[in-house]
Image (cartoon, rainbow, N blue to C red; front, side, top):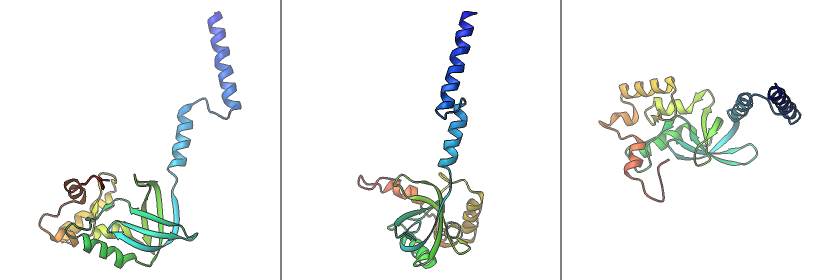
Length: 184
């Protein structure tokens, strides 16, 4: 009985102390709250200042900050890879010197926003896949809409899908990896 009373007293004391410190008694609720904050969308309107390649751009925000942005859910051919120049040129034609809306929830290993990019009503990520200028990067993105656009581009032999056996950029990088430029 004495142990039960001491146990109840300790539990009540801890709950009271946590309340004073602003902590919850249920750690899963605290974690969920942190997760919600972490997953909050960020959004900017910006001017495209440079097309780096077929899946990354530089933009200048309204406050003058330069940001390198990765088009989330896409993986375009590398510059030296077959269709690399065409992919980059397609993104330049679509975006260069345009105002865009950029939204993201997280950043990649290089601290670039993994973003959805919109020029007016055009969803740029989807357009690059639809026109066959980028792969749907299924390893990191499970969008059915993007997967369907890639299937359609293959079927219609658009862009890179005109080639008999196009090499996926992730396979190309793996085969051509160097110590100074590791795979993403």
